[in-house]
Image (cartoon, rainbow, N blue to C red):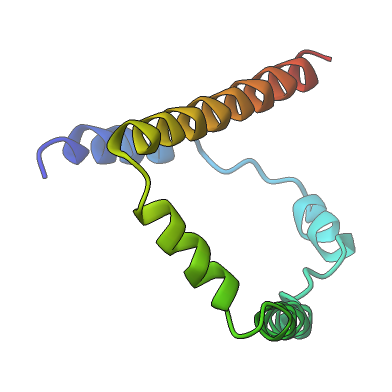
Amino acid sequence: MPETEPIDSLDRQLREAAPYIDDDGFTRKVLQQLPVRRQPQSFRAVVLIGITLLACLVAYVLSDGARSLIRDLLRVATLSPLALLLLALGAGILVTALGVMAAISKNHELQS
């Protein structure tokens, strides 16, 4: 790719231009004293996925096999086009407002 060639060339030039400065083993000693990087905790992921699946199963059983969900979907399907438009518009405004609030909150966090 022609776009990466100048970057690769610049990277190579910078690496060649910076000679290694002997620090009498200081870097090696510091790296040896750093804590060992822990491996990702796959057990935690398995537990979280298991609990999520269990919660989904409980919700399915408590909703009487999703009959209430199907009934509500049929009720929405019988709404007039104007009602569907207003429902979609309201949902879009709600999601947009939540996104703006989250962005403002994050902005205040970063400025603090």
